[in-house]
Length: 100
Image (cartoon, rainbow, N blue to C red; front, top):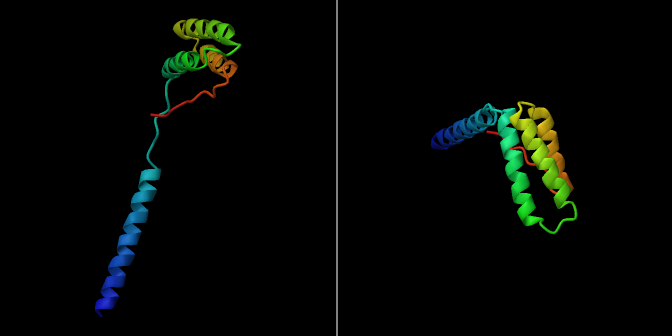
């Protein structure tokens, strides 16, 4: 009889762990706003310019960053995001879009 209860408790523990894991994976992720994406990408370009200072496309990447920042400031974030992402690609860096 004791073996039965130990098995039952183990099964209940397993079910509760699975339920907790499923609940955690269903947590809602808040996407970044376009303004936040602009800020993140501009910061990434700054970091990439420091670490890839010898890249042949530094001047072009800086120009795209300035243009992207102007678009973002003018409430044209979609164009700004594209410019900033292209600046990163010129430097050989993949843009990272973190979620909150």
